[in-house]
Image 1: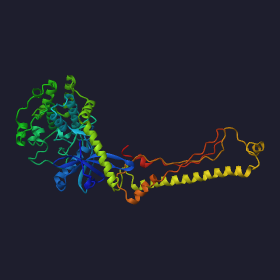
Image 2 (image 1 turned 90 degrees about the vertical axis):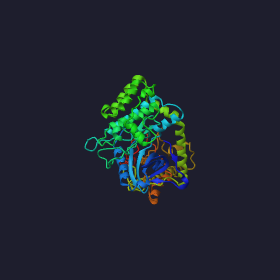
Image 3 (image 1 turned 90 degrees about the horizontal axis):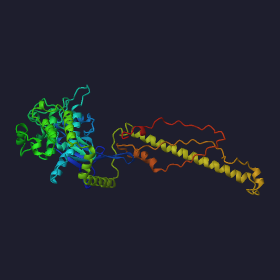
Length: 492
């Protein structure tokens, strides 16, 4: 998804601890931004931030819809659903944090193909719709805390809400107008939520007993248009579009796209039955029928083929976007230093407080200084021992190689070494790259960064005694059983 990068001349913009990089998309309810999260050890990760428009922050209905989306989508765990990772409120308003999908929407892929007077390959389209149906079925099967079906209906299945990633996986997104039995808000009488051109007839009529078969119909419209490369119901006005959805006959897909196998066309048309009892009962049945028909006719694509197609069509744009983001972040860091850290009570290291991080790094530093001091004393003792033998015991008149010199000093056996008490070296492990998203006050930051600015002491262990000599019992120090800074990395 291409992002229009923000102008750094007007200053850097943040939503809590997330720095906004560029605008991805904007709708009537919210704007989606590309954002980054920075942390300890040079950590950096990109996210998509969906922020409610400022003029809607005081509108209770829109705020509740926004929060409903977070509650619904956060409970759906499926590879074909864009996950919502966090919901929050800041000085700039309410926001959702979503996984950033590098790729493009199905709508823009269709638009690009039409502009170049080409068609999307049939196998590619079918694979993308199979992924979409898998994500929709996972949403429909969402259950509440009592184990009952939550009654989720997306109600806005359209090419704009299907994200096709550079990894070859299509994902359904935007549950902003989804309907569920447990949602906080309800659609008022006479209100239509969603895009009319993709609505099921019962949804367009405003029926209150809407169920998952409405999404089956909408997915059928998306598939019909993606294979036919033309609009099915769209007209010059919303009223004319609504009339087509409710009343006008639908052309059979095979009539407008004869290159599609009749079996696949029949599956699509069954999903478009105006009588919902005549459609597939759910998206899983739709996917099974579509996959079987496509496999029989050799029109079934794979995720790898979708990935290759996306790289062919969007590869240059993706690489250009990556480079633009890299240069933007580099300029932002040079302009104002690293992104300021957030200041909640706890950090993103899994619950460990900043004071604990500071204590841990101070302990590392003190331990390193102590062992450096002991090492220096040991080296001085060895030097004194050698100097005493060569300057005080050995007569000056003796030659180093003379018999008298050899008789004055004991000669060790070949291969043996001077036995010294073994030394315990207990160097705390370096902390793994751990994200500390919260901000740290200046005095605490000084403590956290201190070990990184001091060169670690060089400690050379004493040689082990010869095998023939008994080892003296080494002194032992108890080590901590676990390092919370290493064991609680949420990004591991």
